[in-house]
Amino acid sequence: MSKRPIRIIQWGCGLMGQTLIRTLREKGAELVGAIDHNAARRDRDAGEVAGLGQALGVRIHPPDQADAVFREVRADVCILCTRSIMSELAGALRVAARHGVNAITIGEEAFYPWTTSKALTEELDQLARDNDCTLTGSGFQDVFWGNLITVLAGATHRIDRIVGLTQYNADDYGSALAQKHGVGLDPETFAARIGASNSPSYVWNSNEWLCAQLGWRVRDIRQQLLPTTHTGTLRSASLGREVPAGHATGMKAVVVTETHEGPVIETHCVGKLYAPGEVDLNEWTLRGEPDTTVTIRQPATPALTCATVLNRLPQLLAAPPGFVTTDRFAPAAYVTRLETEA
Image (cartoon, rainbow, N blue to C red; front, side, top):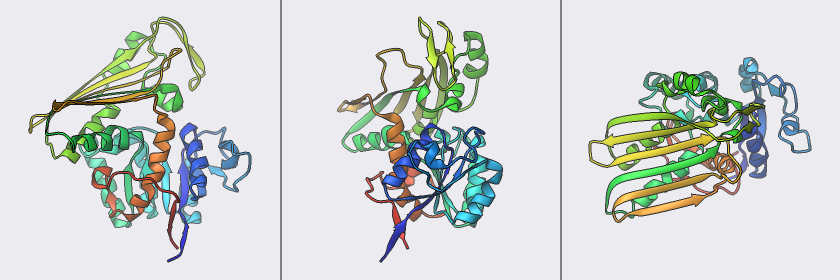
């Protein structure tokens, strides 16, 4: 049976989108469309914006031209790298679903939005079913806050508590993430704007994903959103300004999930501007019989995010229609070539 490259629309051509444009080509996929809200990238060639040193013949369009892009290019998949929460992602997901194009997003709430955005997710699920396509969320959390832990659980007799710590540089993901983490805010503004927010932090949804995978029912879930600070001035490249000492360099989210079955999941998610010497970290401990700790020091979080999304594409194309979260997929697997049936 003959194969052809998977045809991809990249929606969001910032830092993460530029990495995806490069790596999807190296995996043998074909970029056929590009969309971005940033006027500085609009109407430019996607290859130029991604720093490939060559034009790809794919012009970056503004979001108000998205329907025309989808009609013209006959894509298999849309990769969405824009925002983090479902209310901000819904418009783009609706466009993809209306055109019957499978979509995968690195937006963290989309990883498991069934309770935090129930009505919206059910709406998107029905729209995707009606148009015979699949929507999902993936990224770093898919493997390093999800599958890694469920694999460890498979070697554990009894789990009493799962404790996770993940840390990443808020400057690696562009201005939208830095703003969501409160970078640059004074303590009072952070408390009012970020700390008092009821918006789910990233590990809220990954905790629920873990419960779904492990067969646990959530009894209670709560979070704290706390500012991180530094004793000196740090510069935010993504925001293009200095952050004074004592102002928020980012956010630490602590989410505790209690289950009816007994085990508790406690996750600490730190996204901040790095001071010299600070690095990404991913560490998980399963407490019970036996105790197990896995530490991944200095994971290349942005690169791992992009690689996970691309490796998920064959499973996305094979999934049933609807909004299908990856707790219902097989574990992410390495893919040599991003091809589909001709």
